[in-house]
Image (cartoon, rainbow, N blue to C red):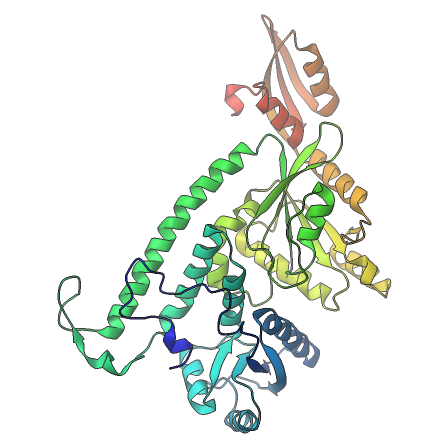
Length: 447
C-alpha cells in the first residue's frame, strides 16, 4: 500500500484526525532518496525551469529527502494521463530501476488520475509540489492553530484523490450512522473526510474570533506585518528590530504561526510588528485558504514591510510571487516599506539598482549583521506618519498639553469649545490616533 493509499483508515474513530502530524514523516526519516521532475511549458524559459527545480530540491531537503537526480522535459502541452510524455515515463522508470531512489517529486501539480497513473507506471511513490509543501507545513506546525490549518489543507488536497484502497472496499456497509446498505467503504471514507473538514473549519472559525479579540487588544498603537518569500529573513529582522528571540532558522517555512512584538520607532512612537508565514511560488490554494486566519494579520495591518532576499538570483521573481499572494489576500494596495535584506551576501551592487528601479525605493539591510536597522525604523515611522486619518476628538480643556500635542502631530481642520471641552476635527497619524483612542479622547461619532 502506497503513502497515498495509507492516509485514511476506515476503522479510525471520528475523534481521531484522519491525517496524522508526525515529527518524522515518510519524507523526514533521512533515508528516502528522490528524483526531481520538471516540465517547461510554453512561456517557461530553461532558466526559470532550472530555478524552480533548485527550489524543489531545497523543499526536498527541508522535508528530509536526498535528491539523487533530475529529469527535465519541454512540452507544448501536458499529457492528460501522465503529465509527461510516454517516452519520458519509460526513461524515468528505467533510471529508477537502476538507482536506489524511492520517491519521484514533480515540480508541477498533478491531477489525481495523473498521480495514480505515474505511480503504477513507475512502481514507486509520486508526490507533486503541493503535497510536498503540505508535508513540510505539517512537520513545522507547532501550535493548535497551525496544526488545524495544515490538517484542513491536507484533507482538502486528499479528498479528490481518495480511491479504492483496500480489497474489501467493494463490500457494502450498513447499520446505524450510515446512509444505508448501498453505501460503499469508499463513500464512507469520503463522508468522514468531509465531516472532519467541516469540524476543522468550525474550529478555525472560533480561533479566528479569538484572534480578532487579541488583535483589537493590540490596537493601542499602529500595526505592521512582515511579509515576503519564505526564508527571506523576516524572523531574523523581527529579532533585530524588537530585541526578541524568535526562532529563526535558515530553512523554508520555519515560521508558520504569527509572532508579534512591539518595536519602538522613537519617543512615544511604538508599532506592533508581526512576523507571518512566508510565501512561495505555486503555493497550494488550499493552504492559502486554510491559513487565512493567520494571514489576517497581513490584511488588518496598517503597513506592510516586504522583506526580500536580495542575494537570491531570482529575487525579482520572488517579489512578483509575493505581490500575487498579497493580491489574492486582498492586501496588495496597502502602504509598503520594501527591505532588500541579506545585502552582506550580494556580490553585484547592480542587483540593488535593478530592483529599486523596478520596484521603487528600498532600504538596504542585513538582519544578520544589523545593517540598516535604524533606516528601517525611520522608514516605517515616516510611512505611518504619512497615513493620516480624519477623526473627531473631545478633549477636556484642562488637558492643554494634549491639545498642543494634537496640533503638533496632526492637521487641525476645525476647532470649537463647549463648556470645559475642546472639540476638534483633525487628521492624525495612526499612532497618534490610537493614543487618543486609548485615552478616551475620540468622540463617539468617530468610534
